[in-house]
Image 1: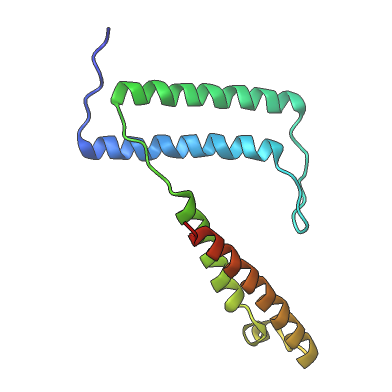
Image 2: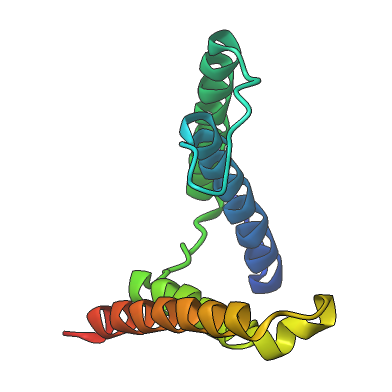
Length: 140
């Protein structure tokens, strides 16, 4: 049996970040292969079924190499809080909506008073909904 690869703490941290990036890349490639369109997002289906199969297989191989390297180097996994991730997403988007009201949009040209009032109302409804989502996440 071969000896484990001995790395200093700084090297282990750097390799761990690199391999987590590769793992995220695999996640994103696999997600892109099954992504569904949204109201304001269309998906150009320009990856063939054969390409999708090949990419999923290769992604599995990359993940296998990551597992092998992790066993060889004994890296510590990063721990991500779903709650913190969701709260951060909600917080950023609340701020974006708050900072995109009709007053801020004047830089793109004049808005009629009616349009400004309606847009601000729509944004306020979205902000209220996101704040309600925040309260759901914060419940124990």
